[in-house]
Amino acid sequence: MRAFQLVGWQQPPELREVPVPEPGPGQVLVKVGGAGACHSDLHLMEAPGPPPGFATEPPFTLGHENAGWVESPGPGVTGFAPGDPVIVYGPWGCGTCANCREGKENYCQTTRGQGGGLGGGHDGGMAEYLLVPAARFLIPLGTLDPRQAAPLSDAGLTSYHAVKRSVHLLGAGSTAVVIGVGGLGQMAVQMVRALSAATTVIAVDTDADKLETARRMGADEVVLPGEDAVTRIKDMTGQQGAQLVLDMVGADPTLRLAAQVARVLGHLTIVGLGGGALPVNFSSPAHECSVASPYWGSLPELMEVITLARQQKIEMLVERFPLESASEAYQLLHDGKIRGRAVITPHP
Ligand SMILES: [Zn+2]
Ligand SMILES: [Zn+2]
Image (cartoon, rainbow, N blue to C red; front, side, top):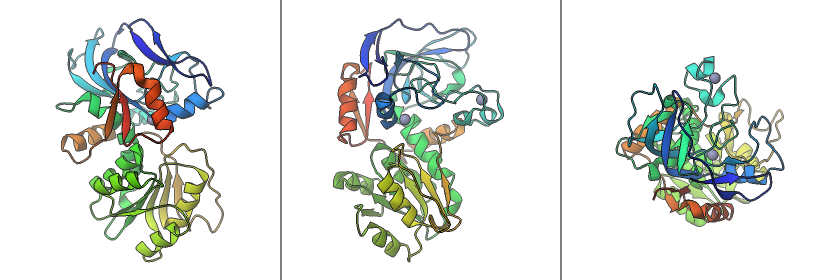
């Protein structure tokens, strides 16, 4: 089969011919419907060597945001039949440590909690077939199309988890600011909408088109970053700032803005891997404002995200690319030219 692989650090990925994996006991072979192209893959491609804690050496297949159809369940697997549409929970933990038993395999205590295509020693989904190491990582999609649903497993789940952990702050009259409304940020806007109808959502982005999309997806206000962004957001919040500020970029300028608009007792949540640093001292961010950097989300939360999608309460803008155009998709992502999520579809 064909697989889009990282073949060496700081080398462009290549489409290579590799054997179709055989599912062993408890494993499931999935025919890939969609594999989302994520910004974190770009960081991986540019990395001079394995990032901290990264256990996989190239070559390995990229793609950690996957959905498809069950191709063949391995020996002992029950509950799944060939042809079933499924989404793949991405952070593959051990399944038995305390965090994994709560479904928080993203915080597995015995491995890095990283799945296929992201350094857990497994190949990802940018290939015709994906070997999933345990059936518990599969969630039935029902009527959802895997080619459309794939981004829910990362862009959807990551943004859902980032909002849900702060939902107790999002009461009447509250405000959430989403900085950066590309694929991930557009989902975050919708997740605030889905989890708290009472919250005012402010979207911030340099790209007017993306702001327009954010507005269509539920943002109440849109703001271009720059000189008066802080003043405008303060004016919208009675000079208090926002209860929740989600930085979906994580670069120095966005973190600076985030620190200026998060209120006392608020949450400043860094989701983007932009590599910036947030200075913290007694007066900034605001007093008792908590800063967190959540990673992905839990298995039960992915089930909630799938439910929201089935209820049509969230939608994902998807641009499909055949497997042979994966490089092109990443280039467009790199250049900021993907409006939602680029999804590689090996079986269009
Ligand atoms: Zn990702
Ligand atoms: Zn574990």
